[in-house]
Image (cartoon, rainbow over all chains, first blue to last red; front, side, top):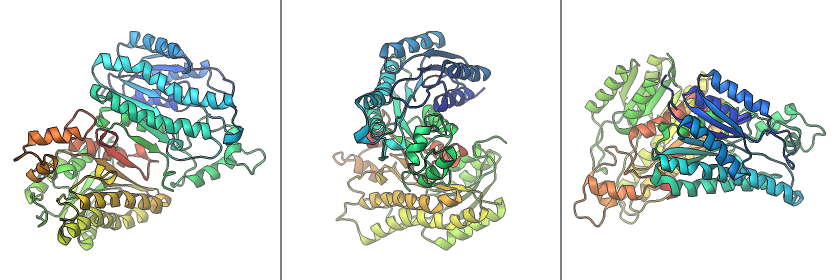
Length: 277
Length: 277
């Protein structure tokens, strides 16, 4: 097998479903072994169901069905020790670490002046703090190994432009772009690259839920996915309502593979042209 | 045939050597047929030699060695009719065109106050207007075919930041980034994507010559390639003196393939972090 990630081990957070599962499977298709974590329970101030242990088990099954190895743990990116412990288990079993996808993210729509302290804190702590803690746990392995590496942080089109009614999310995602640039500077001498992917709406449970439909369709009484589609489509330049997780995964694959060996410090939109519309 | 651009046809300007040749060969390796053009004549405001017929013969040999077909012509991006005739003949032979790499470019030197009208005009005519003419020749085919497409314009880090001593080049490359965004808007409804690649210094004949060495090492009397490697490396965050053509080609391949099917309007640096240093 001569996959584009052959022989590499990748740490993926938020891997139980959505983009995270898609990344784990896509990278495994190209020969990577996976270290996966997910919270696997709901959390206060997030108004839609989060992934479950059964979801994480399904990711394990899908990676193993490809003939690759995976070490999966339940861990909260708000807890550095939990991340570090899961990562240690993974590296102990899989022998190395080459790449990181800091993918965990949540959202909780509300106008800026109605966001509670708890909502604000939860989004910043998970989306931004969790991304930093994920990198912090992984960087020592990458430096000590001395064979370089690639870190992809999941930002958003909301990391590059404003969106009404998700001020905390927009702030966190902009901050991830800043964090990426600083870490790219700090890690270049170790041949570790750091980039972001910046998707538009992706067809995942973080987007496809009633509070998000209500955010995008404020005029509709009980908006559905069908109501959301034309509104979402109108935001993109390409005539599509949203992108698929697989599209983000293909960009993650490009940024983690040696094909992008000299690309660092870059925010890569996977956004159907939302930024230039 | 299972390449990442299998069954597609790519139109590439400046294909006789350097990045253009590399793009042709990399895309052919992944299953594309090639329509190659190059001016193949020297330009009086440019101090290094342009590509030759022998160079184009080598590109043809390398593409054919992959088992793919290539249609090559003399065409000058300053002459729309020559581009149109070359592309139409290529489409006649190979059946269609799906990918456009507007790669032809030159480099000349002078501070803004020193630049002659002729040096300015040739730079803009080739590096900016030539990119527009390349797109203009290809767009009718892409729209008529109705099967979408991907246009990749070769900009530069100089399309996103300035460098002293090459104001005309910086202006042209910034212009290419702006043109890309407008083309992305205009062509989205036709499922045609438009992006730029923005390389730092690439190890090609456009870069590896005495005048470039002098630009980078103004205090050295007769700067050598080694002096340039040091000075060039200092502008790049990642510990490399420059990037290779293959690095740009891998980014072109990504943007040309269906893996990036929803990426449009994006400037993709291949710059070792030069922009964030």
